[in-house]
Image (tube, rainbow, N blue to C red):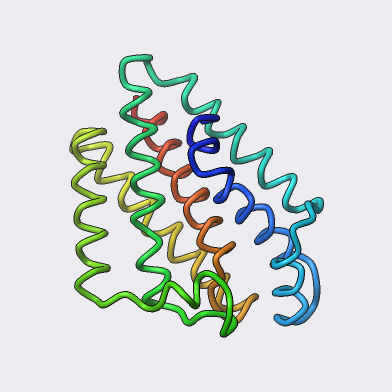
Length: 179
């Protein structure tokens, strides 16, 4: 878990914290977006980080050591595979920033990302666990995208980081439950 944060420089974790601080404080989307853009850690962000890291650690503790690495790979792949779908389905919240600059992927690119991600999850978890993990990842991803649009007016780079962290946590929890 630490190695995934170190490899990315904590980018997704920071996005999770900033998103939770912004979406669950403030009363208007523009206020929320301002809080998200700030890099200061607030209560909701700290709690989100504690819960996500704690859930990942707890999940990995229940998975037999030989399967833990495969489960973590499946979770990280699923989390990253969800990002093109969010970029495709909801608009950017502002006309500057990372997610706006990333642009909107084409439908076939989104399909390919989901297909390749699903194939890797299948390879890492096996058919039964993979099917449930993919369904849970899709449901969680849709919920996050809808929340981002409703409370933030669209997606931001930080919201993409939150998507990756929450979807990967959900998949790791499924892997643990099915172990």
